[in-house]
Amino acid sequence: MQGGSSGIGYGLKYQARCISDVKADTDHTSFLTGTLSLKEENEVHLLRLSAGGTELICDGLFSHPNEIWDLCSCPFDQRIFSTVFSTGETYGAAIWQIPELYGQLNSPQLERIAALDAHVGKINCIIWWPSGRHDKLVSIGEESIFLWSLDCSKKTAQVQSKESAGMLHYLSGGAWDPHDVSAIAATSVSSVQFWDLRTMKKTNSIDRTHVRNVDYDTKREHILVTAEDESGIHLWDLRMLKFPIQELPGHTHWTWAVSCNPEYEGLILVTLSLSLSLSLSLSLICSSYMGPRGYMKSLVILQSAGTDSAVNLWLAPTSSNDELPPKSLVELPTQRADPLLNSYSDYEDSVYGLAWSSREPWIFASLSYDGRVVVESVKPFLAKK
Image (cartoon, rainbow, N blue to C red; front, top):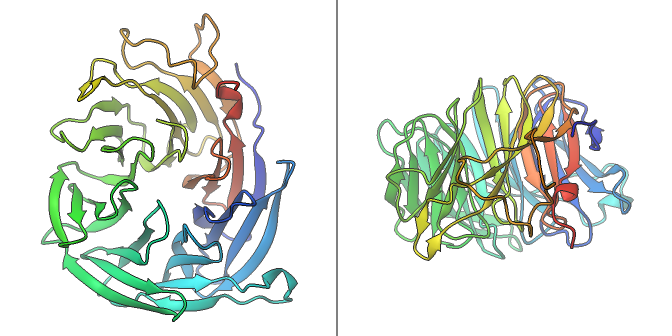
């Protein structure tokens, strides 16, 4: 089946690269996004999906003093978020708070709770533990990792511990294990490094070049997904890192980001930068992989993004021996010759930002470099309850 997009769009004033689900907002499906203008004053937009799911509404518009390269909403307080920003060659990071009565103010101003200014050199991202209230933050720079103790009531952030990434390991990003508050994964030009925050020591690594992004499977322990330049998507069991348990094909240019669904097991969003296609695909993990409890089978939804203004939904089994995906996840016709399930066409520029909604996990938001936010639903492809 092919068809037009059902996506809901919203245009930012300037270019942008990052968007975040507001997980702590349990009353609305909402997202935060920030702009990346070199010459103009940048903005943070608080977007809310209308009750009928037909419109993206700007609930708050706030000035931000610098170009925003990374933005993440606090998982336990909907008014708090972090940004990484730059002014020329100088990078910084801060924790911000949205004013309580922002909807009643003419010009609401963000309040800076704390500056994360201990890094020497470029800072790339701030990560929060995604699984609940936690008073720690991790900042990842090119050359070091910092663990911070955050006290929002006192408006302070103090370095608890830090460690160098080591010679020739330039870190670019990372993810916090939702199943283990002491474990993070950090990406570098030559490997994925695993760190124990209690000792601030590396515990293991995967030797892979040009890993752009990683994410942990939120429903299954020990599963990590990596996005790599040109070589595509790999799924790993952290208990056996010699080889990936699944390899999904690469694309013409960079695979930029991955994001695991917070509720539906195995659903993964993936964006590409400067690619020839923007696709959303279904792939069945090879059933010949033997886990500790027998054969592991899981459905993977793969979205890839690029400049040809299209999103495709594919059904792409990785092996002729694979069985059909479980009916509990996907509605499938009895026969299907064409693996393309659906096509979207909402993009005119490269897509860098992705965020699943925690409140409505069948919804995701994407952000293209031209500042266009698009919210899509994969609900038609989930099983009818």
